Image (tube, rainbow, N blue to C red; front, side, top):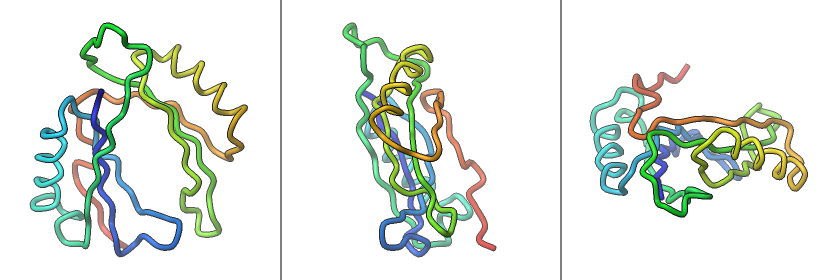
Length: 136
């Protein structure tokens, strides 16, 4: 199991759209919570605005020996609305290898009609959006 930390700008979210920032994947929920608190209190772009967070517990598929990974792969598919915001997002569980993520990608493409797809690799504990963001 890994824990995906997502910060959300509530002011820029609306109806069926959430302005989300994937911060990273962590081995424990406590690590994810500590990182979220740090971002909400200290990182420019997150601490100035009405942001919140959620932690998503993600299964690591095909990991019967409960290997502690250095990185995980996962698949996302989405459509875009008239504002070019990502909507209708579907996600896979996490995988230990790119090959397994590629297999899941093909299965998900057959089951879900989406305009865009991504197969991504994230190192456990690495932080994304390290500089926050600025509204224009």
